[in-house]
Image (cartoon, rainbow, N blue to C red):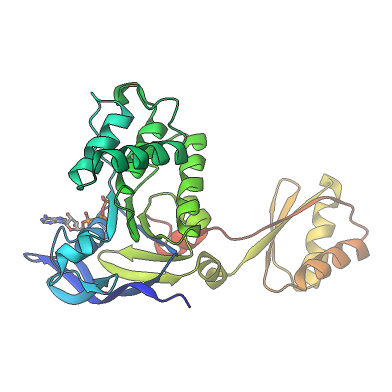
Length: 308
Ligand SMILES: Nc1ncnc2c1ncn2[C@@H]1O[C@H](COP(=O)(O)OP(=O)(O)OP(=O)(O)O)[C@@H](O)[C@H]1O
C-alpha cells in the first residue's frame, strides 16, 4: 500500500519579523505528484528549501523518506533529486560530459557512470545531441538534461522548482510526459509551478499557499468540485434570445446573456436535461451547446478574489 514519503507537520519559517511559512502540514504518498501553487512570495521556495535541507524551519517538523530534515539532512540528501529554475549544468560542455561529471561527483566508477549517462540521455531524448555543447541546446533540451542530472543518483523523491517556466508548449508537454513517467515508475515528485494547467495535468494533489499558509489542499478534482460550477453555453438565433431567457428563468436556471450566447451555471447533473427541455418547450432551436468544467484557474481566482 502507498505510504507517505513526505510528512510535514506545523512547519514554520520566520526571517526576522517576516513569516515566510506558517503552520504548514501536508503529506505526500509514495509515487504521487504534489503540485505547490501560490503567488510570488507565497512561500513555495521556502517549503522546498526546507524539504531539501537547504534551510532550516523555525517551527514544526518535516520528514522525507522517513528522515527528519533537520537532524538527518545527509540521509535526506541521499534520497532526493533537485532541479531549480536555474540549471546547474555547464553550458560549455556537452550533455554527455555534464552527466559523466555529475555521476563521477556522486562517486560512480567510470563504466557505470557511462552506462547511466547513456540510459538517461536515451530516456530524455538527448542521445542525438549528447555530444553537442549545452549552449547549443533549446530551452526544453536543457530542462530535460537538468532533469536527467537530478536523476543520476536514482532519487526516491524529486523536487522540481518551476520546471517548465519559459518553455514553449511542445517542450512543456515533453517534460510533463517525462515527469509523469517518473511518477508512474514510483518516484515521488514535488513541483512548484506558476502554471495551473501544469498542476492539473501532473499533480495527484495540490496545495495552494498564500502568504505562507495553506489556503487550499486536495486533488485537482476535489478543488474544482469545491468551487462548483460547471457552465453550459448555449447559442441560439438572435430572434430567440428573449424567449430563451424567459424559458430558462421559468425552469429555475440563471442565464447570463452575451450577444446570442447564453451562459447557464449548472448546479446539478439534472440541469442539462432541464435546460434542453425548457428551450425545446419554448420552441427555441439550439445552435450549439457546450459544457465547461471549472478549471484550476477558476479555483485560484476564487481563492484570491480574482486579484492575484
Ligand atoms: N533569505 C531570506 N531572507 C529574508 N526573507 C526571505 C528570504 N527568503 C525568502 N524570504 C521571504 O519569504 C517570503 C516567501 O518567499 P519564497 O521565496 O518562499 O516565495 P515563493 O512562493 O517561492 O515566491 P516566488 O514564486 O517569487 O519564487 C517572501 O516574502 C520572501 O521575500
